[in-house]
Image (cartoon, rainbow over all chains, first blue to last red; front, top):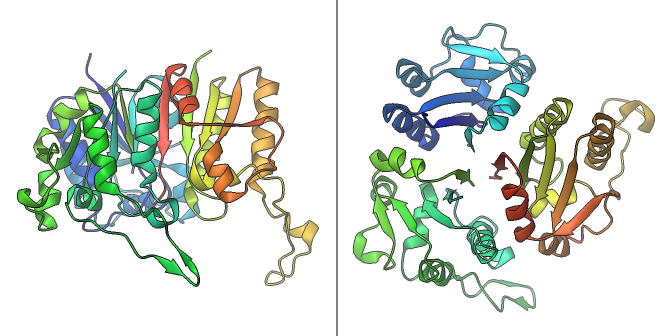
Length: 105
Length: 126
Length: 134
């Protein structure tokens, strides 16, 4: 069974804040199932038109990118980038309960 | 159940706590039976440098008796059988050469992260 | 019943991670998942009963109108939610962190422990999430 990883990105990414993205990409490349969930200021990258090359690279590598609906609404993000899917916080509960290795960044 | 502790921020409240609290926590859970290893990345790669000296913290008439001893703590972890690894790219970014480092620290490339993570049932990023 | 363990680190009123963590724990309990919380460092202050709400002069709100959140009330609410759902809930404050911070008077049901308790919680859970501070 493919290992399953969930990355929770809570801060807005800066130029040097790419450990999680690098690790997520490395794991996806190695064949693991990887999902990225944007929460808090991490959700700022979900706005349509935001520049998020690392997210684009992850989705190109087949990594689903989700964004916490509450965080999107809190930040007035009505239009989400097409490669990002809004979701409820209980998605994270489900992933944890199913045993995904979850890393909070 | 093997555990990988990924430590990224360094020197966070280390003077107040007289410890890096995540290294301390790692030693504590190892003492409770947890087979926990450490991966240092980001600013925490500096923990592998020899010659760290936090002596002399003073506030008014108060002087610190036991400054944090990060090198000692990492060495104790290694001596206890923990694997302590550090990311090569993060060392290079900070100009840390191999000869400046503590013995026993394993240097890994970011390319090997996937394989590393696969070895652990729990991965906790701090 | 499956159980999840969460390790929290942030003190109240400092970081968005705190409210996200409570939303997550609430969601887990509502889903019928048992929850264990190990509060480390600043998070040991979350269940302190000496937290007091206040008025808000900038917004012109009285004490009652402001209804300012106090995280200890959140902890108490989670304990009640767990009981109502018939799921387990356990909150352990790291004892040395309690001593450091004088976080002694806490919500009934919160207990004092050590990292060894966290390891035990982890072994008893299907998964464990560490929510680090910065």
